[in-house]
Amino acid sequence: DAGITQSPRHKVTETGTPVTLRCHQTENHRYMYWYRQDPGHGLRLIHYSYGVKDTDKGEVSDGYSVSRSKTEDFLLTLESATSSQTSVYFCATRQLNSGNTIYFGEGSWLTVV
Amino acid sequence: QQQVKQSPQSLIVQKGGISIINCAYENTAFDYFPWYQQFPGKGPALLIAIRPDVSEKKEGRFTISFNKSAKQFSLHIMDSQPGDSATYFCAASMGGETSGSRLTFGEGTQLTVNP
Image 1 (tube, each protein chain N blue to C red):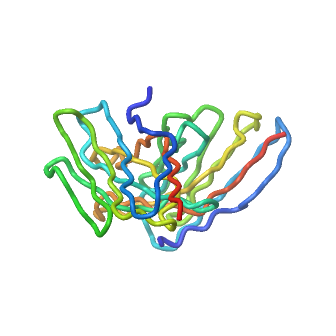
Image 2 (image 1 turned 45 degrees about the vertical axis):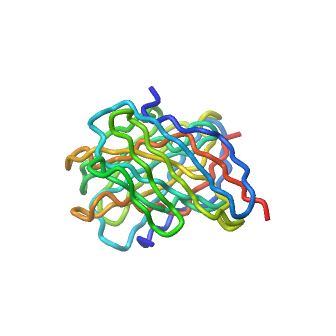
């Protein structure tokens, strides 16, 4: 358990509205990630961060942005939500020099109607 | 481009049987191969992992077999129990600080162990 808290855990929103998901960690891990999980696709990386203000795109970054102003918080924003972004979103963290173990949060269920 | 392919999509075994899940990868730069276990409503959790310098790793009833030349690895669950019923994901990553060792996942296998 890497002390990862995601909020909100469940959200229903309308198409075209902006949505922000928050990931908060208490272990001071350097690396943070946002993944989405969809049936038949496993987990796909959206964005990741390798330090405060240092972020980079993953394989499915279109329509998403992130920010990391503090070590403990990593925000994922859907700029204008679409139905294709209905998914389960997982935040994950990894500590520097801890091997490659990545710890996942409990997930945020997002439905775009 | 799916760099890690996993099969089967679903698997049903009887209690006490052996569960086998297979994965194949394309990128020879991958140097870390974990398996994650996920229960409904929960996030994935690391189960067992292997690096390509060994061909097998065993932890309790769980074993990873790794074939570097074939670019394949598999998870074997011995004496499968109903409590093992979950979704299993294989994954792969490569080192490097700016790469962040980010994981590329397979599609997942839903395992059901019948009592």
